[in-house]
Length: 198
Image (cartoon, rainbow, N blue to C red; front, side, top):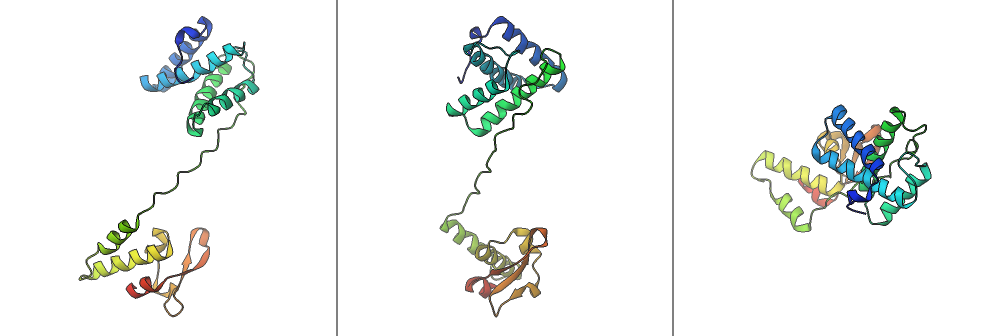
């Protein structure tokens, strides 16, 4: 169901989608690319509904949920399903506003939860190159190396590191007292290498 042959659409569905897209262009000034994506998203729904012997104007909430589940089962990512749902919601808001439907079947459908991508990590060689980058013969180079060592050893946020004061560091115990988000305090072990550079 990646591409939709426009000949699969009934004339009524095709005209309805064209009217909606004209309104989107007028109201939001959407680009041809966005309009093309919207057309594809709603056309896919229309063709799916036609196969279910239903229509865009007589669509029920459970049918929209089944359609979105089918899209996900076909391998569409949660992000792509969420984008398609956004088009569907916009389409049904327009139909309701135009008085073409009495109830909006998409109104109570929530967007799928989108996980945040994992942060990229550095290789051991990258870390070693980063730690060796500062020029140790200058005071700024020594400071930068100490900061990098503390970041590497503790996993502090950058804002936590740059606001760190000497009174928060306990070299005897090898600990830093960190005030983090929400003014929460925690003790973080430093490690010998970071202590050496500090």
